[in-house]
Image: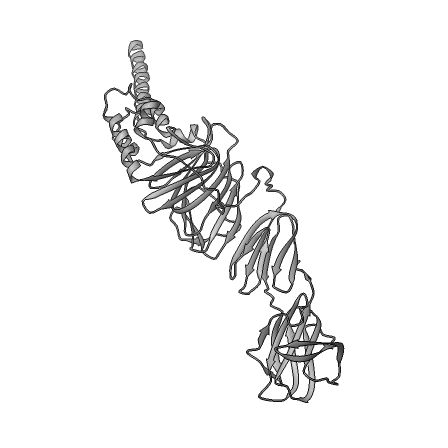
Amino acid sequence: MQYKRYFFILYLVIFFISIFFVVLYFVLFLNIKLSVFDLFFVEKNVPVVSVINSIEGNEVYYNVHKNNREILRYNTQIQKDMVIETGVDSSVSFFIKDHGLYYLYPNATLHIKKIENFTSYKSTKESFFVLEKGSLYSNVNFYSRNSYLIVETDELFSKFSNAKVIIDKEDFETKILCFDGNVNFRPYSSKFDFFQDKRSYVITSSIERLINSSNILKKKQISVINNIYQKKMDNLITRIYESKNTKFVNKDYIKNSLTIPLFDLEDKNYNFPELDINKFSFLNNGHLEIFTKEGSSKISFNNQILKDNTRYLFYIKKDDYEIEEELPFTKIISKIKVIEGSFKNIQLKRHSGIINVSLNNKKLHSYKKEKDILNIKNSLSYCINCKSESIKNLFIKSDLNIEKMYFLFEKEINYQNFFKTGSNIEFNNKKYYIYDYGFDDKKNISIYFYEANYENLLLVAKFEDVYYEDLN
């Protein structure tokens, strides 16, 4: 009985050892991932710290895990399996802590397949983007020798960890431009996946690394990958996989089999955003959302020209800022205070100076704007046609304070609140007397003429050099 008991224990030990080796075989050789192994040996993904740095335009969308498409907002977090899309006149830039700055140009689609996956048994931090169309600017610094970013298109495989790069995906070709650092790149090939799916492991990881690092794009260089180089890549991989002896595969062999021309970058403006990543702070920032309306003035903020009818979103350090609106005759500076952790929304008003002129209580829909009649700085000159009726009253409305109002008459007058300046001017071969009109309300000016008859009424409105507004 004692022997039977020992044999039973021995059978159990052999049984469990056999089960262990069978499971080990499946895991190591058949690439099957078991949840129980993941539970004990794999740490879950650590979420990244990200922020939307700026949004330009109204067509910036995203979806996660192929769910419904949503509008990208200031508090949207960048995450794994996210697809970001920009419209024809829209763009977005986002910043990832310990990672870098990214800018997706208009009419582009970016799929973030993998982002900063950490595991307890692996120190490498890897991110994997697929640029489906359009252009992507990347300014990355991973602070780790083992960490890197992979960006793929239909034609390109690229890998870098500390570089400034633009990747431009067009129909049937991809351009890659390096502005700083180095980029390992090669033509994209589905042969890797194809042979791996067939359980063919002739290519070792060292050979794959050789292929991936055979072409290096350096600072101020550009290269173009198309289907010609993809065919060369496919042929190279096929030869290696189908060969029984891979000893012939070395760096020189791969380089000679896969030569891709490199060109110097042209010296021009490539329109990508600059941000000092080392000084970027996530602790002292606030959100500023600006909506612009249509107008003739030029608006700028933070050295950026803002377009009409556009939504902008900025994630910036707490500080005092200015929005500058420039008109041909004056400038408006609007002051804004961004507070730590705040969200400020601004519907930006556009100015134009004189916005309404009414003659005899009737709004004029057209009045001729003249060049500087009096050659006065910060002024607007107008000619109002009065042929059809005698002038009883004139009303002028402005969206900016008018400093002075001058009228030009062919004859000397004696109306209330009109003060002769003592000078005259010749305009269109006619002599005019200049009068300064006195008023109290600088935005709403009413003038009474008591049945005056003039063919044309000339007036000049003088504005201040700079206007200051507080938008807080």
